[in-house]
Amino acid sequence: LKDEKLYNQGHERPEGDFCPICVQAIPFPIDKHAAFYACCMKRVCYGCGLAAQKRGLDKICPFCRSPLLNEAFSGVLEKIQKRVDARDPESICYHGSLHLIGAYGLDKDESKAIEMWSEAADLGSTMALSKLGRVYYHGIEVA
Image (cartoon, rainbow, N blue to C red; front, side, top):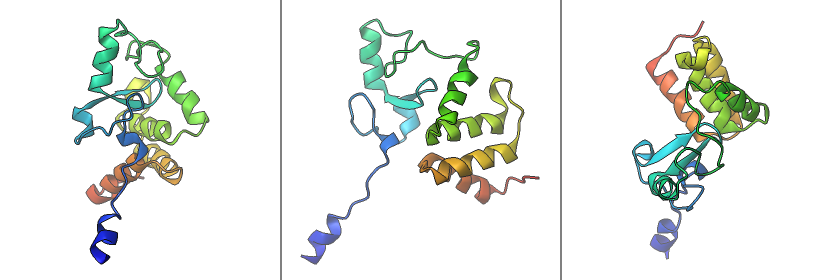
């Protein structure tokens, strides 16, 4: 009875580890088995991406059906900011990462990145917790 209770207490994977289309767990490492779409802040498994591509949907996001965003697309930051304003934790985390590297014309600002990751972590983003842990572990200095 003691072993059965112990083995039934498995850890649950966070919501972001599942494809929002097929609802299957994305194998580890997730970055090698799924694509990230900034338009809806979703990670879609390559299987669902391939199925969408075979149906002729290769120029749009397989989840939200909006046109794919790229660096040349001027509305990338506006779409991300809209989701940040709605207090979406994954969007806040992603926006913080953009500040860290200075992408899409944003100023490179490590303090802002850590501030945004802290906010996202407070809202429940496990990715933001991971990023904060790495920053503290590696000792990135913030003025």
